[in-house]
Image (tube, rainbow, N blue to C red):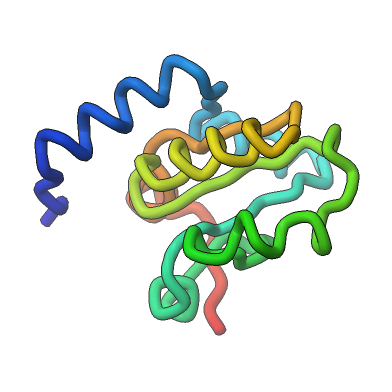
Length: 125
């Protein structure tokens, strides 16, 4: 069952979406299938990451992303694709990275939930 988000949270996400580029689950999967080396960052909580995540993704939870991103990704022009459970937290995280000077950030709309529903590959641990 999908989580019911509060109206204020949804308003914040929808306003933020106006400033953030998004990609789809299918676009990310197609790029991976073509052999593109994508920098995927999972911004979910550690317990969510441990359950499952996209193969090859890095975990930088939303709570530490801004603090740790510069050490992990010093080049602010690197393409970064963020994802979360459904595409809400990743939009907010992408907006913050843009405010920090990252110029090639995308949020994966639909998040891991859509990825999982399409039976695309996942990994655990």
